[in-house]
Image (cartoon, rainbow, N blue to C red):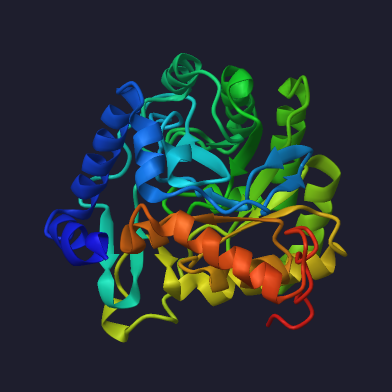
Length: 358
């Protein structure tokens, strides 16, 4: 495979963040070339038909989307659908511009097919994101925007600042995700506490007009005792959940890697994320739509998360290791799994293995 044999080794000689920024710049340039996205789609191949699904009142051409973190500044909505994605989640976007944490802040773990990041929500802010998305025009697939907090925002001001961010971005997306679980922003995970999250969701509801689906992104490290109350709150005040964010756990890594600071993503997160999806599905009797993310590299990983209870699935770190052809390849294999399992729709698979997942 060209990417794994030639392109990835070249990119992996570069600093991880510089390589990412180079890939974003090249995609951005390609997106501006007339016919560029169509050429890219022709080179990579067309996604398999028969994977359409309806979730959150939105129509998705297939259930595999891009996770937040890849296109933080909303620069690529015109070109990313050419990779075969059924939807995009862009951001995290903060109300005001900020530089993020000091560099270096992104590290590859090739043996584990994983990343550890402590980016800290770098970006140009909500106004810049809104301008870019307005200039890009209609996207070929549904777009979600992941919204986060600036580092200088106090807990008391969090509801107000989330609401201001949503108000600025509201015309630009089909759904929104409130990020209260990134481990790289001091104190952010505390916002998953029930009363604080209720204040945030109430403030967001006041500006979410006309109503667009609002989801909450949660951590994989939540204790079982926290989940019933948290999910009950989300069911009352939001429309779904994204499970999960990166993890601070190092239990799946070699001991010598345990001191690296940041959020871990990729293959070591796969099992924990799938287990969390199944817990959510069981606790809510399948009534809360779930977007599953964490350790997705293959069609088998997508299938596992669908069966655990996710209605949609996202990928990011898997692209770093598998390359831009990953999405079309995964969807082709997923279509085969669907047929082999005797299912005629993606929706029919959702939750069929939730009782088995541990």
